[in-house]
Length: 312
Image 1 (cartoon, one colour):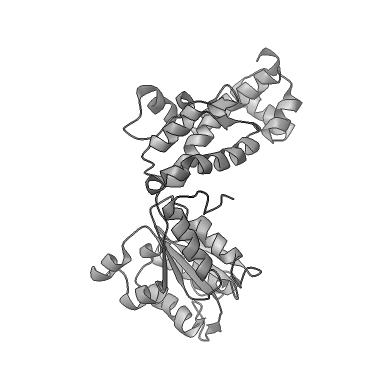
Image 2 (cartoon, helix red, strand yellow; image 1 turned 135 degrees about the vertical axis):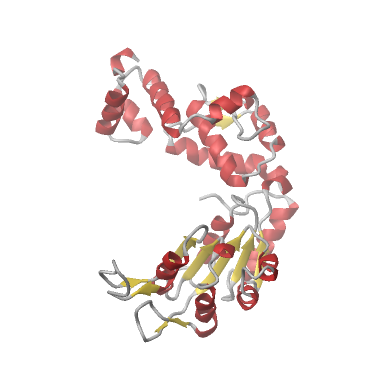
């Protein structure tokens, strides 16, 4: 897992200082930052370095979830509570008892569910759907959002009392454009893991590639960087990734980059497998070992694509 404090820039130093101060407290924490900036990574770090580290860490992305689904996911339901409820289901708050619940994109939580979350925080209890008795629960809440929750309060889309309850300790996760000096270190850390996962250990970035990464806008932040580096690892023909191997998404890309970025994952995977087979001179067992997949799976892929290993 990537270190949420990789780098030495002022923005990340300030975040690290604040996070270390509050990791040991039990109050709710609100992580604010753009999509893909690493809020989930920071939430996990806060749990691991807090007093509940040995207890469960349960996370849920609330974006786009219906209120009915969200309600049963968080609070559970009794058997027969509704059509299809053929068994009792514990909710995530119950599963995370004595641990941490991380609610990503809490700004998307329906107004009908928000009072029940508030009750958990203030009274440490809730009621499953279809039951008449309350369940007691002890959790620490970490919430995250890319939205302006205070503006949502003004629009009547988010409860004011819940906002003040979850924002006891606000932490802002800076976007990559505010920490450009940290980009090479972050990229090397991501690349090392990606190279190992894809059987291409030893891949590294050229100086020109690192400069190109620093110059990019990174609207998708760390998540976008991971995609760019994964694509480069899979498509690069050598162990050194140059600036021409980096294909950025978005309107600023050149024709070649845009074409590469439109490749499907299946197409990228096929190119990578074919290259590994060429490097292993058609030896399927060695290629499968490098790719980290069973030999039988590799044979199935090759058969589906109509590829004969001996002719690679």
